[in-house]
Image 1 (cartoon, rainbow, N blue to C red):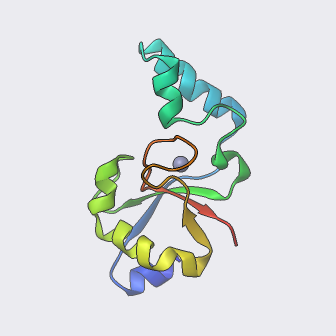
Image 2: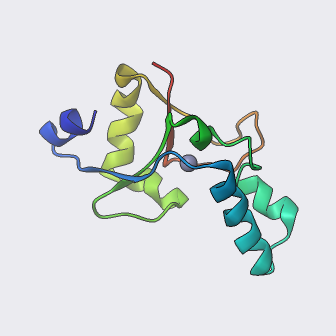
Length: 114
Ligand SMILES: [Zn+2]
């Protein structure tokens, strides 16, 4: 998929892939230590054991000109390319706007379903 995007002038940037339960726990602990409330954290970060990143099939993708994991990624050429072409490579957007999981919109998070 990376090579196909590059042939069409889009540079997909892999930012995060496999993540262990321990790593997921550490991320949540860090946010708690920063003073964030757990319900707010869990709207943006899956509970340890529940993240698609534990499967090794989830990828957080950026654009060479946009490396932040934020909704502005949806304005990039990389996202527009993914919307059109990712399904052809077996990827789907896990958390579109108003998804059934109650997770916030994550235009950067793609899951390989084969
Ligand atoms: Zn992700």
